[in-house]
Structure formats: C-alpha cells, structure tokens
Image 1: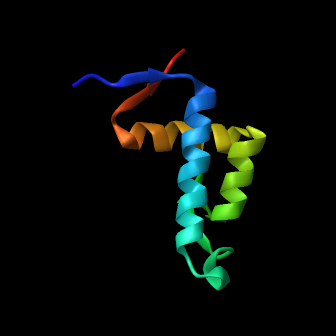
Image 2: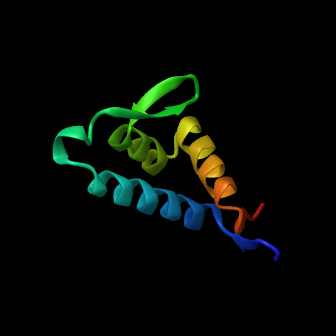
Length: 77
C-alpha cells in the first residue's frame, strides 16, 4: 500500500487535530503538563500545538515527525 501525498498545510491540520484530541482526553489539571519529549526538551501539548500553529522550526519538524509516524501519508514537496 502506497502512502497518500498531502500538502504541508493538510499535515499541519492533521497534527493540530491529533494534539487537540489528545489534550481533550486528559483531565483538565494534566493538560499543561510536559508530556512530549521532542527536540531535546519536554513540551506540554498546548506549547507544541502553538509551535505547530505558528509554523516555527520546532513545529515544522514535529509535523514532519508526526505525519511520518502515521505511515500512510507523505508530505508533498
């Protein structure tokens, strides 16, 4: 089965949706806890979602990492 090609903006939306869904599954008190280890530091879900939304270099690398982990999509370009 080959991977479906998507744009970076579609990949970014998928990543934001994933982070939002994950955060909403946590109890409110745990939502700001640092649970993501990425780029040699820990991030809370809202922090990483902000990085993704702002298109920072960390956010861009995280989008690429997340989409690659799905194994069914590849970012065009």
